[in-house]
Structure formats: structure tokens, C-alpha cells
Amino acid sequence: MEPFPLEDEMAVTCTHVAEHVKKVKPHTKGCEECLKSGDTWLHLRMCLECGHVGCCDSSQNRHARAHFHATQHPLIQSAEKGENWKWCYIDEVYL
Ligand SMILES: [Zn+2]
Ligand SMILES: [Zn+2]
Ligand SMILES: [Zn+2]
Image 1 (cartoon, rainbow, N blue to C red):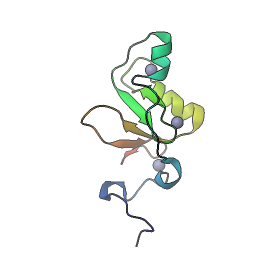
Image 2 (cartoon, protein in one colour):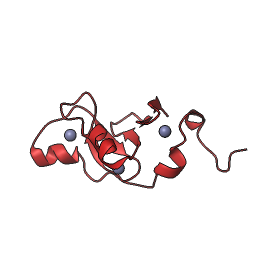
Image 3 (cartoon, rainbow, N blue to C red):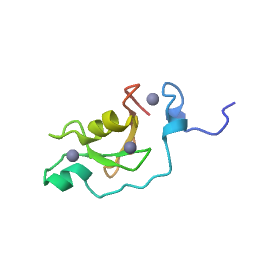
């Protein structure tokens, strides 16, 4: 028995969910760093630990990944409409 119910697809490989997923809301409507520097991005990812919004690995600046390296917040969620997958940078798995 699980101590609390997890969605099926979140079951196995990643052990970071319990500790690193908080109740957060996106800080910004776009990538925080790109908005400041006036850059553009392709897709947005939101940090599930602090609500930081950063651009994806297909974007020129890859701020979502940079945020992970800076903060060790391993879990992000797609901030694109119609997408609800999550990703763990440490385990490199979709959740
Ligand atoms: Zn993980
Ligand atoms: Zn960015
Ligand atoms: Zn974060």
C-alpha cells in the first residue's frame, strides 16, 4: 500500500516527487529570464518546487534546465496547453 494515492504513471522510477513537488503556481506567463532579457522561447516548463517558469531544451537559452542546475529543483511540468507531462532532470524520466 502507498501512504498516499499516486497517479499510475507517477508510480515507479522517480523518488523525488514526494519531496520536491509543492503546491505552486507559475510565477510568470513566459520564461522569467527571457522576459527580462527580451529573448524568445519555444516551449515553457514550470518548476514544480517553486513555480519558476523557464524555456525548454529546444529553446535557445534552456532556462528550465539552467534553473535545475542553479537550484537542484529536479521536477518540471510542461506549461503548454494540452500537455500535462512532468519530467525529472535527475532520473531523466517522464512522469
Ligand atoms: Zn526523480
Ligand atoms: Zn528562457
Ligand atoms: Zn524551482
